[in-house]
Picture 1: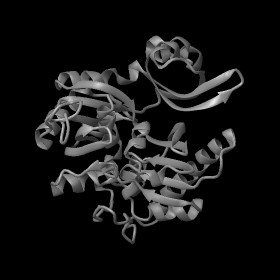
Picture 2: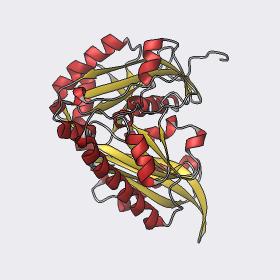
Picture 3: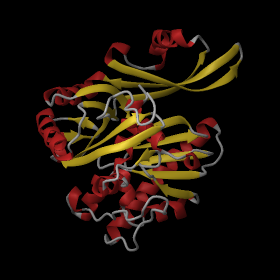
Length: 352
């Protein structure tokens, strides 16, 4: 098929789904990898105790919210790529002897146990080949291993089943962010920081290759607590920029001294994690920080990070690699950095 062929998942595409504290976000795309188009998007509030630190706790409440979300956003597909990131997600970068591609999956799974502290029977395992190097005994593959504890995703899967949704892929949420970054955001040593409502993450990559991922104790919920507000009451800016225009925060933070207290602690946590990575593997100094998640809409935070870390800071553009739907409410919603993870998850679905 040529022209506007519908790709792997048919006319309605595939939905990237993210569970965060207090909210569920989802984005539907169609097409093929590299030629994706936004179809629909939406978000729905849930009780904060329904999802805690990236894990579903109350699957009944999550399932009910998923039903509302599918109805309100009018998603055409019930096939989803589920994002997961919690304390039970483990990532490892390994060097592996080069073997024929047809044998790689089996070879890695046979050897994977030595890289994880828990039995593989308790993990959902995935991997990605991110490079090739010369080893002492011949060519080696650089492989990123990702293991998610099955106990940490059982309630998520139960909620999907109760909602008649089909998970076609389970992906680590931080890695999904790679798929939404433009080429200008990949060169050099780059930190991708996703400040979520709940569990946040920091991923380091060098020249587009992910090298390190870690959860960080920085969240919008903490900020809300310092302000004495509920999550949905936190003052955030809504991006007004059209495609191609810079996305910047509005002046004035509207939060008084609570912003300074929370933000400076957040900056120090981010700085120490970055420095740990750079010293661990002797990589070049940081060249760029990409800010994702709802934390990317905290006024003055991008500017503070840039001044304190001494590097350029960009707020992610989830539609950098996706054609807009042509529906202003949907396109405007997905332009927000909140939707970077679920857009990247949806793009993973088009990869097969």
